[in-house]
Length: 249
Image (cartoon, rainbow, N blue to C red):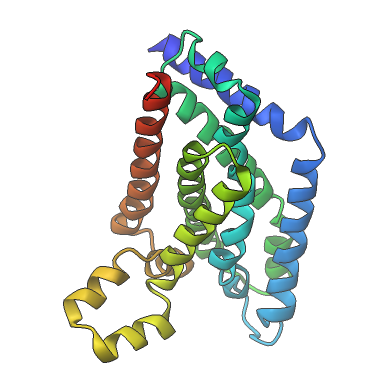
């Protein structure tokens, strides 16, 4: 058990160091923070709402992550395959699962760091009014889980191809489906011609209703299970692909 944890930590440290070894990580963080500020204060109507909340901040996260998270995760396995280092990685005394979990945790930690750097927004809303920090904290938890779900999907698509652009496009399409499945304009359109059971089935795959619960400050076990299920299934599918590559199939 200790050796497994040590292996995961080693892979995670290697992957996290790879992010900051180039300017890409810093550019990503700067773009993320600028977009968060723009969507919150310009498009989200932060001041027009006249309430001490971060609704206008979290509202845009499903769309903001749609491109930024796949951009951060597309290199996870595609880069290894392109450089030919995957064979070297898989011949090391580690299991495929340890490599997958290590890479995923490192990228998730990187996204968590970028999200944590938005703390000036929290300070601003607390300065301007009596904010409910419990609701804000729940919103951050939901945002981190949402980013983790998108990242796990990107991890899966990255293992499917050695081309990072293809990995990016596929993951964006899948994540877009996870948004549109519960987006009100889409569900209203489906209600007009599709049976109720089909509409309910499509909505069940959407991240929007589950993320909305966190925005309201509700820590519902069903929402937690939903996001963790996406992460678990995507990483499991990634493991299947990696094992096939490892066995030469």
